[in-house]
Length: 202
Image (tube, rainbow, N blue to C red; front, side, top):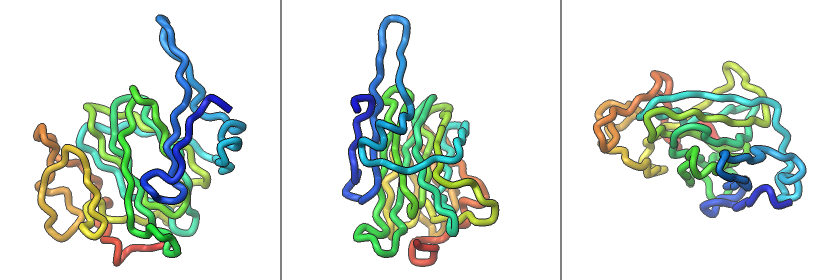
């Protein structure tokens, strides 16, 4: 091994991993391996990926919190441009940390990756002017199988950095903004998800 450094059970939640690839840089720029199956297996990470996705979002966009119910996906996520605050919430009913969350800032500078196994809700908030977000999935996207969790459920209590606003009993983004005044931007669908006590669990 040697190309990756793995922090397992991040935030005390079993299965979450923060991965730091080795970056080789000089005056010309840098090179790194963003994924190496052998190194991952040596670190005890044996998941198999079947799909790669990429998205681009502007500042203040919050995507999530999402999961697939019958075809759950493990996700290995990273940012190639900009910065996001990435969050996972444990929805495994037999887990000692059910309902607990962990968040990490992923940026083009720190080049950290975050592995979220099956059984979690996942989402992120864009902190930079623009963010390009890449992730590998352990199962395919299945239309109609998506579930969600309210991003601002007070029972979970996620602390989104730089975000200000008052919870008004729903996942609506109305009245929320970043400290610089940028309004929170959510899809219509993401403003309808319900809280932990009313959502799907694995």
